Length: 262
Image 1 (tube, rainbow, N blue to C red):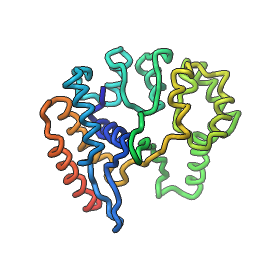
Image 2 (spheres, rainbow, N blue to C red):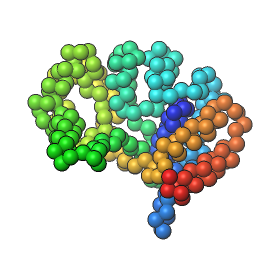
Image 3 (tube, rainbow, N blue to C red):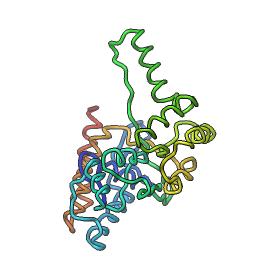
Image 4 (tube, rainbow, N blue to C red):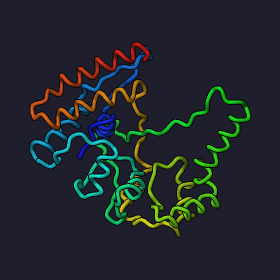
């Protein structure tokens, strides 16, 4: 099944477009960002969804799913497969009662020239009004919370033990921040605490250092995803949805935002 609301439909469509070698935005020779969702790869991704829904009748009946909704549906056995972040198992176990033995993970198959994996992330910010001491403290906290558990054995092991003691999943794969040697070392440190079947996620972890990583669209990203939500919903609810017209409409809408600097 496919997420379709709260910008998730557009996010998934971006991921499956990238996996086919397409892009939703590009920068021309003048340095201007050009929005182009009306492209071959995005249309192919939408055609796949169309066929899944209207030819195979294999897409369920709820076409307004977001992050929490699709996780709940997966946890209750209503959905067998969907696109999500590689670390979603943590939420599935904590919130949706999923048994890690029932979960598997693999990367999207990549096809065609320039195909790659959509990357994303979170912004860690410090207020511009912060004092020098507050900024220094914030950076120290960021290092402690985000970096040291990846490179410091004591913090890595302690964090894994806390998770294991509270029956939270240990060993959930994420996209590595550092090189393979650092990642492998961290995995060895937590090995005694790992409580998920690593063979279930091996299709993902065996490829994470070889898959090309491609950044998200660089302008009005979430607005673009939100506009594409309606396109995904249309394809899943209207057998004869005019994809060309819908994508051209998204291009015009988001290009106007880009050009205005909003």
